[in-house]
Image (cartoon, rainbow over all chains, first blue to last red; front, side, top):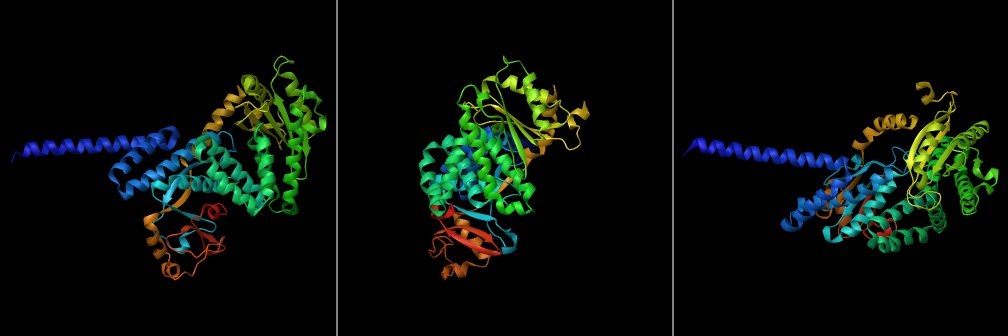
Length: 357
Length: 87
């Protein structure tokens, strides 16, 4: 036997295996960070699983397909929802477990073979959003309010990413939830109206989360339903005025709400020709003088660069601290896109940004 | 300029988030029997001791849709999407 040849072949084979491991490891790592690449990973597993009919490959294909579709949406929602709410989804297969290893409230979903992938996807998306929305304040927020929010986000996600599953989701998840608690239908309708103008994810969810955080150990926790209804009514009233031109017909009191736990105000940014950035900064100063804790700046998609400029100028005010800049699903005119920012009153009187400057 | 600094600062603040994930636990069809055995509830399921917490149908290995720990106890739903949506 020619040992030199065997050693050379052995080396070549090891180089190929090593190369493939590095390549696939790199692709896996990239697809974890860049969700769009997950499509390739998902396609690869699906093709291989269908050809080889191997159980492990089928499990990989199912997990990869659900993760890819959920993570595609997650990437969009990460820029829309508060920081830290939405992280990428990862599926953990459980093959055995002790009762003590399962945490309180934790769910283990049974997943069927690939032929039932649509049902797997619907259950996966719903479970993911149930877990992800309102981290640390789930117990404080009334179940119907929270459940309707999860259903609204899931419904929007499924309608845009897998429209053919929309009906199936409506007939099963939505219908059941409403039959179980008819108030959910009311919330769903109200959330949809807010969502059409970017105020559902833009301001409503943020406000509810903030109130829940602040009232966790106070008496107000028992009146969360009332507080949620009042915020919804305020934003609905505000939105209903938006179609009326000119926007300045909105009564002064309509632009803000001072509640028992928080106070917030809206500022709509669109028209640079109306005096430039000055009037917007003056409006922010007025809100400061009123001691409004939270200021939402909502910029129209068509005037996004100007809205960014306004946000940047308001950030220079020493008493308002810029805490978030986020994207909007729809702007206040109902167009897709737009930019929002949240400022909170600085307790120290000097914003972090100002001290850095 | 301030918005630019904010974005840079925010980028580094959010960087760790890229590597964190929300874990969704799943059990594959053919691993279910093994899982319930490791949990010590296989015999009880075979004896029909558990009911779906929502529709009260008897839970079997064929129709078990989810396992959840609720107030320290394991609870089950059937595979009906209507029951899964109530979780």
